[in-house]
Image 1 (cartoon, rainbow, N blue to C red):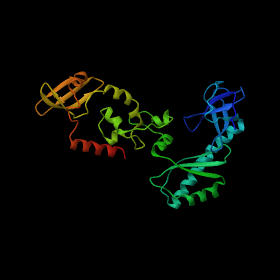
Image 2 (image 1 turned 90 degrees about the horizontal axis):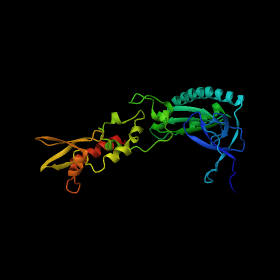
Image 3 (image 1 turned 45 degrees about the horizontal axis):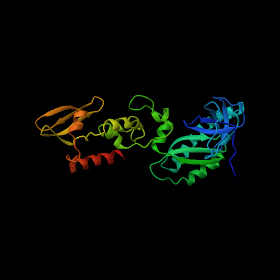
Image 4 (image 1 turned 60 degrees about the vertical axis):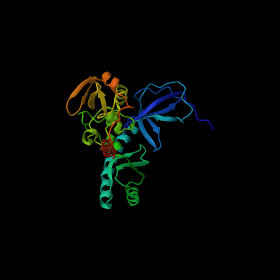
Length: 294
């Protein structure tokens, strides 16, 4: 059975997130900014049109759901009332969690527009048996209850805060998805492997490590790792400093040091002839990487 094709397609954004979701309609009466009621996996929800409707053909790979209607005054009033009721529900849920002694940190509560479902999100260090809590909540709120565990990065996105840079958290401000962040990104940018300086409010590696990673990888092509042995004018040194933005490097040994440009360093560095780091240094570096990746 083929999926229904709609004359217009448009992005719908919800008030609790940054992602755009594609919906369709045969009605030409929708405009950017219009509040609309749509059906999601959770139930009916209120959102708004994030772009001007398009008549371009959409891919048949994904099912496109229809916009149910423009939001009425009653829909908007219900949505506002649901926000207040969800805040009350969160307080009651926290009380129930405390009574049952569960290791859960509640982060948010949200009703669907028709109040057909109440979703609680929480953070927990370990798996939680919340069957008794689910029974208590269902008998208290008389609607379908969903308890959804989220990670520390999702919690930071919901709660928000100020980052080390002094700006609001990227995840709460504009990020739609989380990129994979690795300690190698910090190494590429020659940053000190200090957990306190590299970790965000969520306790994980900061998302901003990915922003300039590709540029640093390109600038560092053909360059040795830090502390790698090199030979310059017949004398053995180790690379103790590099600054790709200033195009400078420093080589040192027990007797002297030499300042070079990165291009000069590339000409004297031969990976096949120079062992990168000795085993002790490699093991220490690996230990730091494991600590930061926890």
